[in-house]
Figure 1: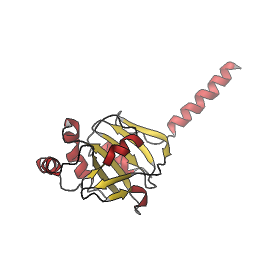
Figure 2: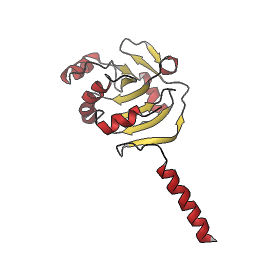
Figure 3: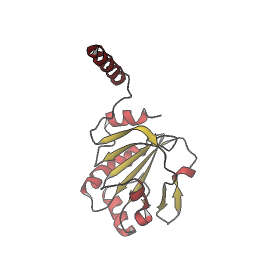
Figure 4: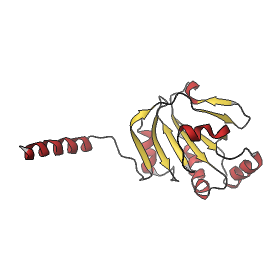
Amino acid sequence: MKLINYLIIFSILVINVAFSKEKPPFKNILVLDKPKVYKEIIFQDRDGVQIDLNLINSDEIYILNFWATWCAPCKDEMPSLDKLQEKEGIFIFPINMEEKNMNNIDKFYKDLNINNLNVYFDNGLKLVKVFALRGVPTTIILNKNKEVIARISGSIDFLDQKFVAWLTSIK
């Protein structure tokens, strides 16, 4: 009887794995089992205007990328993040985690030839607390319903074909 129970459980697990969603292409991407809703995802643009992600009326995948000018991995991934912004159906909010210094940020963007991304800020590091961030770069991916579905800890190549295919398969 125990053997039959084990076989049934094993079969269920195998079937679930075989029919599960496509797995993310990198080990540093954590996909949530169930999308998570946050009531407030609020940050500022470069002019200090408050942005509430939940009030944006658009049908896109959202990427919140938390970064800093002193962060070498952030510097490595930012050009691919900039190019990813050109893809339709994806909107990226690169959120700087430092004290607002537009001279440093403008130089950072200029040195890396960043042309497609705006600059945003987490005033008072409120989103750091909301998302329990532990370092930069950290990227939060939200589906079209603005539910958090995945988190990337560390840098990746946002133009990697496997990543782009996985990202665009998100509903």
